[in-house]
Length: 366
Image (cartoon, rainbow, N blue to C red; front, side, top):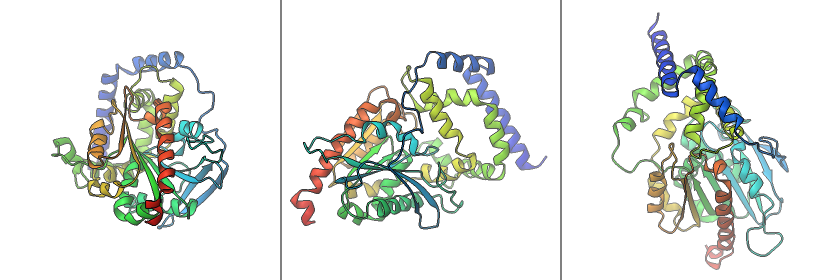
């Protein structure tokens, strides 16, 4: 057996044994999933069933084709662009699309609605696959700028980013600060990070973008994607339980919601997941945060987020002392789906402040 074969085999055996032990064995996993689903409610809206007012494609700088959907009046006074997280797609904003679209945001005028723009990140959802040399945070930031240029070539814009989408947003601020001076009038950073400003832990130093573990994972996934996909399919119950544990924190999260998150992640090929991992773990955009300092900014995070812990949001808030920090008690990484009422209320407040900011004499003169 080759060296790569021994690595793959050992990894598969180790993952299977540890996963079964940690989650109580295959039979127990199946029982746990069935029991949880049986006690869950259902979502009356239907995930991925919401109609768009407009659908089109945007071309990225390297030729990648981004899938874009819009909801809301074409002539709305404010455009809001949503960027989703790693392994997800635009559908992760399901409850924001329901709870924010068509809603006035407090200025007392019937036409005060936002035009909402949702897009699939490169290599995710319906967007086309990026080459392995175009999977950096800078590439994602460029895509966000391209969507903004196409969807909202004029007028005030609010940018909303969840997890990886928030990281791309912050990266864009560092690369093109003029956009945040001239066009962007508000920012929402949800369950995200600007990078590590504190001393590196051992685990972090092992997986930084020059670290052996990430290189090994990426090389393995790109060389043996079919084999890894088979292993992934063989452990569906364990993965479902892990998805619930890492994505959500509340005990009464509907099984259908876990199913939907699990489906989004499972639809993302393993080599795509590995492709983007170095960009996330090697992120260092703390220096870009002051670019957002003059804008209305909200920072939203669940206090039980296990992917981008609350400490990351607190660090962003420390760099942006005028920003609003909203901590959602008992919510995990997918707070946008787990606690949508709080998230949506916070976003509507941001839209109100952003539009007022865009109409202020200081902004107009700038």
